Image 1 (cartoon, helix red, strand yellow):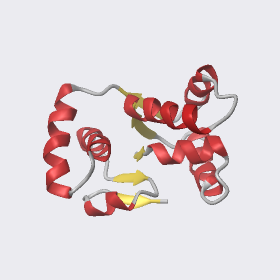
Image 2 (cartoon, one colour):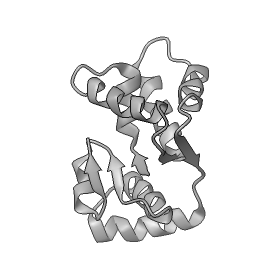
Image 3 (cartoon, one colour):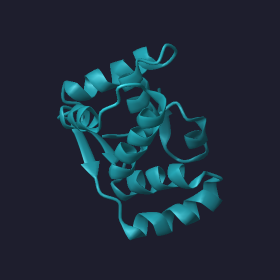
Image 4 (cartoon, helix red, strand yellow):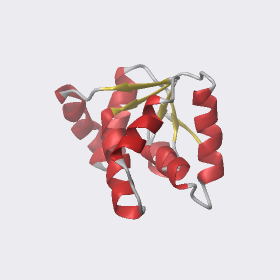
Length: 129
């Protein structure tokens, strides 16, 4: 199982000219049943980015897009995730959002992340993009 970072969903949903193709390949794997995990933070951040960057944005369509990914498990954040994130932020020199993603991945024993964010290269997660 791999963790999926926000940027994958943003690139996929916006058909980003540079990274949209690769993001779509990742999403197709998940649509076909590859097991993947992300957190509610990802849904929220995807909403924020799309709301500010796209025309005709719809929260309903965003939620529908996430729900249709049957191989994707979306987990809730815990207070402990935030506590761990503060430690990881200092340990790996990450911003808080990346640290929260990392904390959730570690909580679920995940060792690989779909992301083009090179900051994750500073962590023990293997970054795939």
